[in-house]
Image: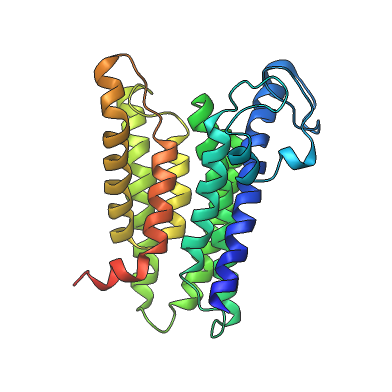
Length: 265
């Protein structure tokens, strides 16, 4: 049963990943050119309207070798990465729940976490493509992160003293959201963007634990350094957007939260 559940999550994640990348491009075009958001998908090079069989997540990209069926121009790698990345993210989150023994509260927490992850992945895609974090989606992420926090509070009522249920999420928010806010204020927006602290706040809410927040911060900065350092070394003016790395770190830490917390004395 668990294997079937993970397979379904992979398929669902691939479909949602395709939708998220498409929606990010449409939103940007709508903002820049006031184009309607509801148009069908087209090739960005020749504007060929894609058929349904051109939109099969992962499969179509592989079959077409990452090129348009009509003009044979390369289709952006972002589409493939968003599909496979979202699919793997959903599967990773799926490993945190046992479908045969999970209770209602556990299911509600899992569904809320998946919803939050979906919003965060959209923000990561948009930030990776355009270097921006749309405010309305940041607010949505914070609301969803708060919902995850409330559900976790109920889950932990019998495990932690009341004091810990209060100070742990506060520290988690301060470590991620607070740190990025301070960096933004000190640097006047040169080190981090104005949306990074809101993104960090949403993630800090959902993580609940200050220890997990510290680990997320470490993982995100390590990933950013490993991926972006070679590029920044070639171009000193190359700008690094931290949103995608912070979201990826959240997914990794959230998926391994139980194992990571068990290592903390």
